[in-house]
Image (cartoon, rainbow, N blue to C red):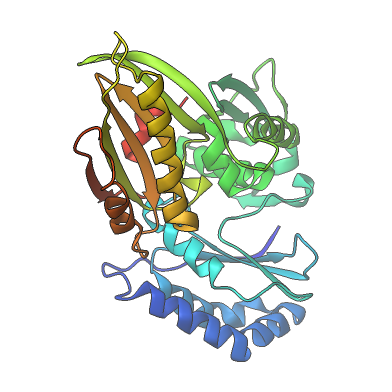
Length: 352
């Protein structure tokens, strides 16, 4: 359970240089911020650090939220800086985390709220009543690679819909974590009456863990699925990673479309054997060139053209690297275009 949570005040103007704000935050943290915050928590008075922590997080970006909680991986305390579901801020929060010092026995860090060990520990005060997360029940219907869920608590019948929904999302974050809620939970609906097939909310974690295991290969990388359909130019064959979601790599916020014509086609407009091998070699070459600063997340093929969907870190030169790396292609003129896309909307139609 969070020891203290604070939404940074949103301002009309974002910080001019998030990178400077990140560097300044960790300099302050290393010099005395970590020790002072730990002392405040030990004294059961974390509020005395609210103003300064909020100011430091605001300097990174005014839309971010922060939270102090008990450590989850060996440290005594956890500091979370979260985008709170805003795709525009996921990359900034991840860059904040990547600049963090190594965790130690006192502090560890995260860029999303973590699941809690025991939902019975969390009780929210609402209009003189307490909503205990351990008392919540849920139904989960799998749709593709996500779960649509309905969540119920006995007090929901007495609460307005917007309050029910707010509590529901807080409960889901506590049960499975903020990142997995965004990645694996689809439609969410609070229910004033308990569904007949409901089960304790705490069991949802196991269902999500099974889905993660199903969609992860032996090296811990996302698996891929094949998709077929029809488009304006004829049959379409696509392949995409699962999950095809920006939470898989929040720092990759720039979409780069590499449109590659090929010479040898089947009757359906798909690559023949020779061109297929050339396309695979090109994909491997491009992936190697961008390295950890980008990844190929999907491709789709139709009418003699394959579009490779890369996402890269907008603070890196990866878009230019990709453009330069295709110049040796001999089966037609390759086009490369890029656009900011922190929500990965350009590949939304390929999500399984």
